Length: 299
Image (cartoon, rainbow, N blue to C red):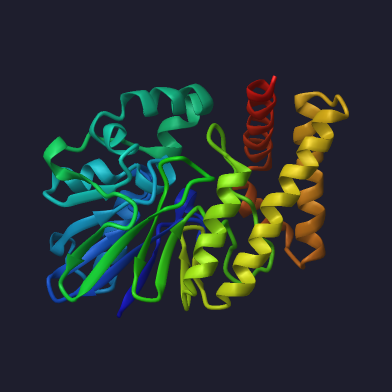
């Protein structure tokens, strides 16, 4: 199987967001579209590899966060079939609520960060259940329901290879630091660990992370990431129980993660790239929201 890793150069920065193209006997299939702001970069990357974008008729998105699926509507409007989790479909067909929520967070930076988010025609969106497969040429692509980062999250499996979206975290090429993708509002540490355990039990030979690239030391990566999920959750829980303010919790999260990253040999430039794509303030908010939600449910 030939997998082409396409670096989308998000915010003119390499190694942050990947899309994956696989050559089949029935054309090309695309896993992850990236945001609308990097659509032209994706199209250029295809041409540079000698690949015809018109041959892409099957698009798979792991979840509908804008860095993963913001350009899915454009591909659907070109005639591609987009495959997704059942809870993601309505947001692909009508992204207005998704865009409105994102605009509240990003304000004047919304358009430059994410670009256009176009609606996908309903007939071009196909829901995949857990364990369902789609055959494209000689390959079967199987969806695995993998909540934790988001409730509407799939990983996609072809043979012994898994395209993980955000469920296996973020690790930039050439670095050892693993950043927990914990954006609000759906971070759930229990579901997250269960999803990582599911990937571990499958015994994959390779992972492809959207953030970023190929992982061949699969068992070690997933074991480390499982520990990281638990560690950030426990640290924020202790901070919350200590009565710290939200801003203090964000700062402590940032300081802990930066210290860990630098201890693992990360450069200042690479730290800035992590912050650009998976900001510690955002992750702290995601973990804290999960803790507050759990306390409310148990009250």
